[in-house]
Length: 474
Image (cartoon, rainbow, N blue to C red; front, side, top):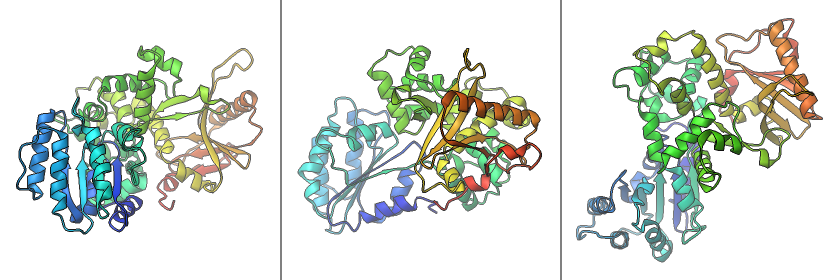
């Protein structure tokens, strides 16, 4: 059963009816469901399908490509010694295919590009010299190494420049899609349960497929990460190795970002990683951003030169906090329930969940149709303004209102006491004094179960709840 992906599936189906040759790239992180989407939508029209081999030589890649040619009907295929020969053999196979729309599906395309293999130039020649002239042909390429797909296919400056007819970046599931997927598998999870699981698993469907019926979310997380032979205990390392060819650089950067919640500028990253100030850091940041692990943003009141990078990936954050030195307890997560460490982590993780659902927050505030600049803000105490402050989410609206969003994880309706009210007012006053926003400032509380009205709650202008974050009507 295909959950969500309605827009992406429609784009793929459109390739069957287009009058011109189609070149489609589907990309996204490991385990997000790219192959499943393509096969579920187009497998009935496949004329040729091939999956690249991870960490394999050119010889092995060609050997398996020949196997795919034989399996798809090319019986007279001699051994292959180059990608030129491989694509010529593919042309012979497709020449024998009926003229209805045949689909070529090359999965895990980045793995085919082994060192000195000349794979990309031969792919360019195959498309430009042959496939682009076959009216009924569609080439669909797919890969987990999003940065490779973007650099070599989407933003290709050579023979494939502007050749793509469609690009489909496949994002992780939203909270609502995770809830629908869990329900389709017979899991009985409340929205709070779904959110708690999302804090660790993000919206990666394959991770959610490992959840077992009859176990609570904490029990499932123990089974997935902390138990003996836990299936996701080493997923973090496998994830980075599958996405990036020089993953040690990417891990240095995410290690540095994990230590600074609101984000770090370039100078801070250089100091924390020890990397030289040059193309290596720029490329690493770009690749992490392309894969959805980090975001780049300009803090409120700053220029683009003051850009910060912030780590958003739930699995990476969870691994850095709890699995860098794995605890010797098969039931660590269950035994940690209610602890200060787990509660503090869940508070920060909920902020990341909110940042992944900004469209839902905007809709809840009825500002989906207004131009909004999403930013954060931080003030380090100085002689003029000795009170420090940090705001993780600002919605700077074109109608001259700023929503200052306070994100608070709570298992019950949130209660603002006198001390909390004082802290919030102090933060708002510091923001007004330092940033001089010249806007109306609305304090917005984002918390799972809403706000308990009392003598201190009137400072909140609007509230966004877990039900709002699950909104699918976007």
